[in-house]
Length: 216
Image (tube, rainbow, N blue to C red; front, top):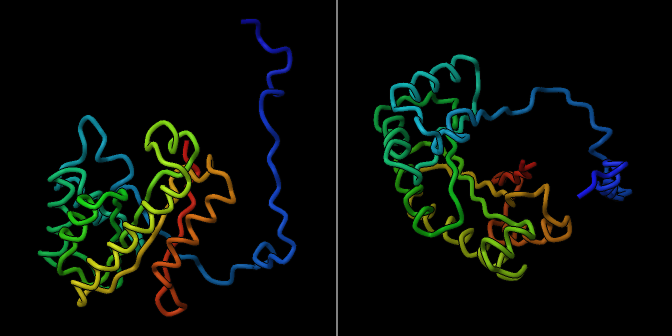
């Protein structure tokens, strides 16, 4: 196949989002944002030689020393080491009072239940739910239409509520990601996010986090 004379022509231009009533682009930050480190989790569970518990603990302590107040500590349902590390932090009271741990789980019931089990006894925890939403994932991997994806996300969002209610001593914060947001139609991404937040009913006093991943 001959090379394109102008390779740039194969890329579609970015379609601007025309929302005239937006005010946030002009907002000036007057205080530091909350930074969340995902270094302990992001990809570690998929490495040929993932970090063991002592290495994860050393890194956790380094992140605390740097000043992070939210730290994603693992993917508890991915492996026994990931699960046991979360348990170690909680059982041995290694989480400073002003630090919140975060964990990640796919939108699958058995993985969500395992995740909440790992957090039993935590003072405060952010639980991050995700499922793929891009067309290629819907068609090739999940075999679901748009309604099926919305149903998947909202069903597991309700499970979050149920499992959190069984551990009332913990202060729960929910987070949702339409995975592959960068490859998802904007209108559909909004539809899924709106459906999840409709289930969770966040308020200014009890917020949820919406994560919009630029997946590569």
